Length: 167
Image (cartoon, rainbow, N blue to C red):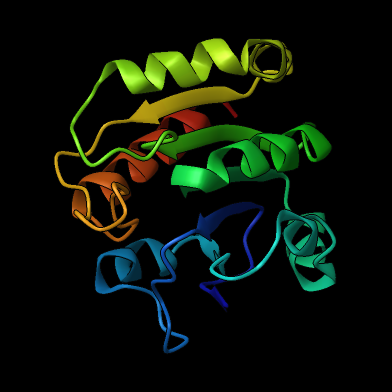
């Protein structure tokens, strides 16, 4: 699902939990969608191959000058790969709870970074800013924060503002 104006800056949300199930952005994203193009890709019950081969998604990203990627949980590795494919356009990668856990283990994110260090380093050398988000709330059933949390939207907007200052 895509929302917002056609702008040179775009946000791609790869959602493992399947929010935006009625084809509408979560309410917390609507203000951001007034000024920035957003694609919300529900990865639920889909493979990473479908994401990497999704023609509409590649067309959406194709005319973007700057792309900011957001995901959570099990999708983090897939989005790292997507960022590598689109590295010239990707400006930031925001990962919420990349290792799902029903406890608030903060060392899990450090473990994730260490596990994927070669790709992580490659992306950073390409100029991609990577943020590990540690939202205070996670769904008890999945250990993943909903990507519609106001704290997450705020971090994305902060990253957009920082990227605009550098452009």
